[in-house]
Length: 259
Ligand SMILES: Nc1ncnc2c1ncn2[C@@H]1O[C@H](COP(=O)(O)OP(=O)(O)OP(=O)(O)O)[C@@H](O)[C@H]1O
Figure 1: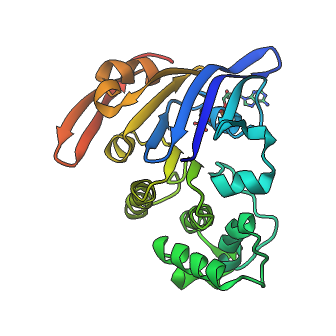
Figure 2: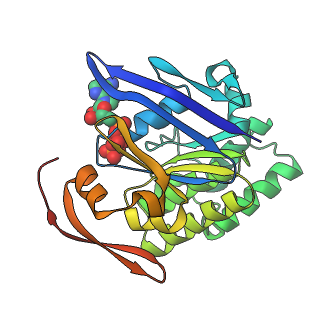
Figure 3: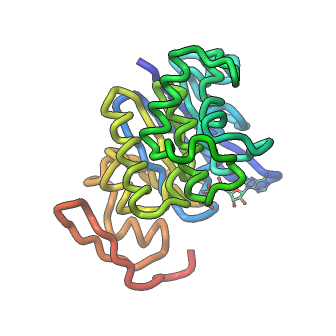
């Protein structure tokens, strides 16, 4: 059972703490959504959990410091979809997705049958077969976002951290991407997803982590943590939560105050 347990993570930029004393667990069987305003520290939290940057605290993967894993061993356990996704050179979509098999020892142009099958499955799941041979520098922003999602899924790691995976997607593809993450979790994996769409998070995630000013303010079920008071506290908005048969809808009335 893969588990990432982070305790008291602190990250500073100069004299300022941009993440303070954050503790969080990601385990298989859970879809966790991290919410919070711009600059709240969500990306910093994700990077600290992965051991990319942390100045105090600990992050353990299956009981061992995450930093003690080689990049390849870590990638086999946790797929990471960063918010900023540089591509060194324009390559065919299929080849970029295949990069996600790196942790399995795959090399571009020399994919084993199991790697090629995984790439095909991932291309299909993300609606990318029609674009498989296109160069990535000819894609729209949303199409490229789906390529990166496919690249994360193709790793078939038991845990995934995805930083704003649906930000550039149209509603149909947002829904499809969240469905894919849900299915990935229902198949026994664990995902932590940074989102700005609160209703989407509430509909698909079982746990919501609310951040502001580098701190985790709340971590719990949708029922426990999604309240109008919380929206006011975290985002500084006056909003109404309306229960619908498809999950809660958030109606923003006005910015209540400066956050
Ligand atoms: N190297 C750095 N030096 C100074 N400030 C930094 C540095 N890295 C991050 N920050 C600041 O830390 C804060 C948290 O950044 P982070 O990217 O984690 O926020 P976020 O919640 O992911 O935001 P967004 O929703 O806008 O992506 C921001 O105010 C950012 O400007």
